[in-house]
Amino acid sequence: MSRLTSKEKTNANIEQSDHNSERILENKNDKKTKSSLVKHKSIYLMMAPYFILFFSFTVFPVMFAIVMSFANFNVLQAPVLVGLNNYKDLLLNDPLFLQSLQNTLILALIIGPIGYILSFLMAWVLNEFPRGVRVFFTVVLYAPSLAGTATSIFTLLFSSDSTGYLNALLLNWGIISEPILWLQDPQWMLTIIIFVNLWQSFGIGFLSFIAGLQGIDKSLLEAGEIDGVRNRWQELWYIVLPSMRPQLMFGAVMSISGSFAITGSALTGFPSTGYATHTLIDHIQDYGLIRFELGYASAITVVLFFLTVFFNLLIQKFIARVGE
Image 1 (cartoon, rainbow, N blue to C red):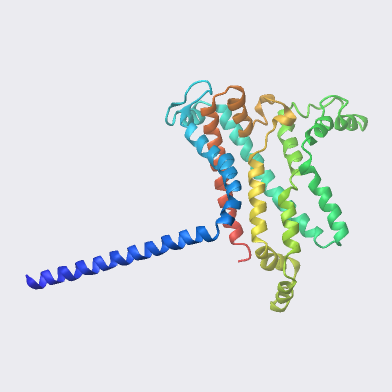
Image 2: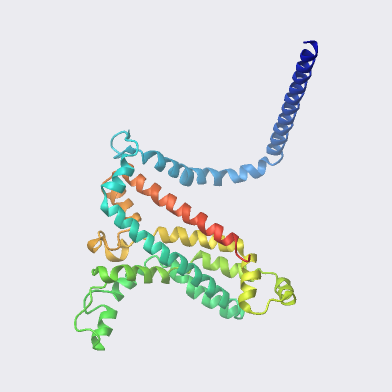
């Protein structure tokens, strides 16, 4: 019994010693954290306005939308919690939501990857041109993404009567005998939305690709030639793309986020004929800004948010394997 008691005392002393060591480490870490805050307080103060704005206009709205998605809220009355009812109605009682989800996925899976690949390939080609030519074509390609009123140009181009430029040309050439309802016929509407958004896809991601290509260390390309890189495609896969992972990631995030935020109402009106171009953004605006059913609109927003996050994580895994 005395030996067991002695072992127990020894174990207790060891545990007490470990506990004291942990407390000492915690105190040291606390002191380091406090000293770091005091030492770099000017940096934190300069960062504070950004973090306040970021939390106020990004983090808080997302958290608020998630909470409101479990409630009925019409702005005028206090929110009433309804659990998962909003999500059940989305999936079981709202065929228009499924239509908008389908349209959004079609647009995102076509415009996102194609716009992303075209942006990179064009940046890769322009990188071979002299500086003046490269700058000129970069501005030309980037300009459409800044043209907020560009839809008015395409409204005129695809006008459904004979005054529309495309219909006028086709009528004069004898290709068609009567004007085509480009923006009212479901057969054409989604295709036109894809075309217009691809035209505007050379955005900030395109500029990041240009910058990334300009920043590649030339010595890596020379080393690749010595190590057996035989053509430009091998150079692209084993040297250029791995050196541009940050720019590739940024461009992918911007491309995916932009493709999921597409709305067809700017060109085809709201609601579009047969809801042929009705997207999740249009559905959110319908319930949030017209019907003021903010709880239901928040549920649609949460679905869109997690779809965007899922595809962003998916593309991150793919980009992480570039060059392997």
